[in-house]
Length: 62
Image 1 (cartoon, rainbow, N blue to C red):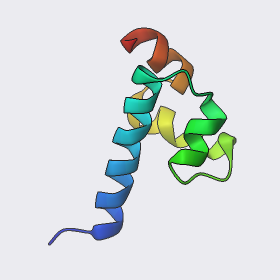
Image 2: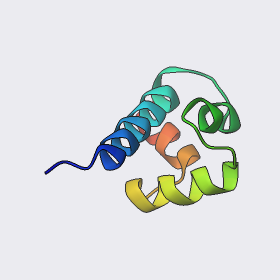
Image 3: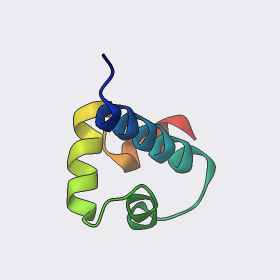
């Protein structure tokens, strides 16, 4: 059985990745656009699931 909360979180992580690669939005703008009210939490969870910080990810895939 699928977990709808997990599915939403996956979609938001994918959206953050897309925004990092295709826009010049700041990390805080991307965090807000994907539902995070704390840039710190965004960084922490992004690194947990992507093995890189948002900045590292952007440099690598841009």
